[in-house]
Amino acid sequence: MSENPDYTESLVGVFGHPVAENPTCVMQQAAFDHLGLRWRYLTIEVLPGNLEAAMQGLRAMGMQGINLTIPYKVEVLRYLDDISPDARIMGAVNTVRREGDRLIGENTDGKGFIRSLREDANYAIDGRQIIVMGAGGAARAMTVELALAGAARILICNRSPARGEELVRLLNAETPAEAFFIPADEPLTIPKGTDVVINATSIGLYPDVTGIPPVNMASITDAHLVCDVIPNPPNTRFLQEAAARGARTLDGLGMLVYQGAIAFELWTGYPAPVDVMKAALEREFGV
Ligand code: NDP
Image 1 (spheres, rainbow, N blue to C red):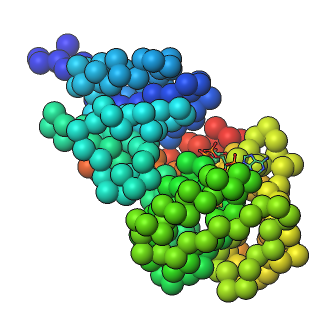
Image 2 (cartoon, helix red, strand yellow; image 1 turned 180 degrees about the vertical axis):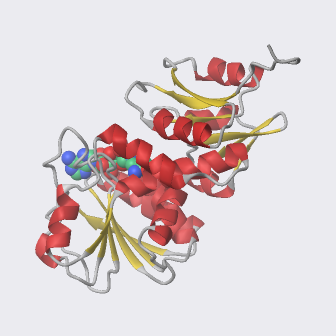
């Protein structure tokens, strides 16, 4: 036995319900192990009504942080000491980090997408017109970050008009971008002047792999960058059909990896081993 053994580990993880199928532990643990860090990522089922107690437990156990997934990204706000400016605009937190005794809320989903745009697609956002299908949590996080990063115009098309119009109001009120709502009454024809088309709905997610968002695919051209949030399978039917029309494409696996990489960096202070994290997820998804 070594002279002064220390068997403790730094703890992070995810609170959610249901959470059993959340694959984040695979990429975070691969990153910790790759860098030889004594950190552990725990996948924790927190039943409805127990989030406050779970957050107290996190403080009591000195955990370094936590991810939040469905249904806790909004409720967690009331148990935090501070919230980053972008997460405050979104009204949602997916990552909590510790600063001494204080718990700070962040949102890395939209930032992960922006980093994937820059690093995987080498794409500059400044001045672009972007159309987003969907107005749920992913769309909210992505559009707020795109607007803060310099996108000029954001068009939101969503099945439920109330949710879509609310996101448009939020973007116009809280960010420098111009935002408009497009009703989803018929398949979406991509308007002139559009640079980027994003599926931010849950259509196409495993096991519904033949699903495709209601877009008039004939209006997609080689002038467009077409992106999908769906990480599993990454090469969705939407991206396959867009590529067949000559568009450049960007899959949702990159966004998933980078949102995790940013959380890793917020927690540990080390640059994330992005390739290791991506390879771990690809193995998990059988890509
Ligand atoms: P939400 O439940 O908050 O939003 C779902 C969105 O999809 C809503 O806009 C909803 O429209 C729309 N939608 C769902 N089904 C249909 C349909 N049949 N026809 C038209 N619109 C539909 O989910 P999230 O925003 O949190 O997640 C969306 C997807 O993004 C998920 O599949 C998730 O896996 C993925 N995601 C990926 C991430 C990544 O890192 N790659 C990160 C976060 C999420 P309406 O408002 O009308 O209900």
